[in-house]
Image (cartoon, rainbow, N blue to C red):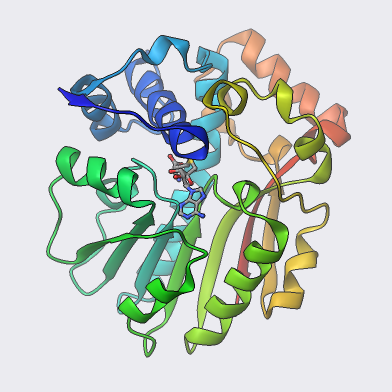
Length: 270
Ligand SMILES: C[S@@+](CC[C@H](N)C(=O)[O-])C[C@H]1O[C@@H](n2cnc3c(N)ncnc32)[C@H](O)[C@@H]1O
């Protein structure tokens, strides 16, 4: 069993990992991430106190799935890409997407997080860990800058200070000949009401960066290609796997638009 002593934003990756494990254990999984469940079983931690209810577990996997689908689409079209998986936490996206050997994948997170990742998961030959804050920009020297880049950042942007986040995207867009950014964004309301976000509150983490309109990031040299607010993450297939109450709650998001607009999954090209 691996001990874990994460605090603040680093502890939030235990909540998302547990959400994916709960989905795997459910009767009708949406993401079906067995590696996440295996990892949870190897971590010596009381996951029940982390603020992830079965309902929240669904929102975790509903966010992960479109990001996986878009990333897989990019890698099918660009098998020579590098992938920068920023704020990777303990996510097993590499295992879920199983990229071809021609893709080189970089998982980036704080040193403590990377240390635990290395104990939990075998690394593939085309996978490299980078132990650094994403905003200590020196880490960018460790990745080749002559290949198209797929940049995936799930559950990261809201933890960055706005100036640091925009500088990060500006540098990424300038470093590679072309690429795509896939990430999620919270709006300013979600930042204001962050105390209602149980996993964030229980981790003792603070959310800083709210983006009301995904086009705001175009000032960093990105062009918005797609944007899905929270009412549009579940597909009809996903809805069919849910109980009636969860289905009803998700339908309500289509009615209460301000609630749906608190979170977006977005895709930009550069
Ligand atoms: C909510 S978790 C998401 C983890 C993972 N992407 C997932 O979906 O399970 C947020 C992650 O962002 C990482 N993070 C936050 N700020 C960071 C920074 N400045 N540099 C690197 N990682 C950061 C945290 O350590 C944590 O692993």
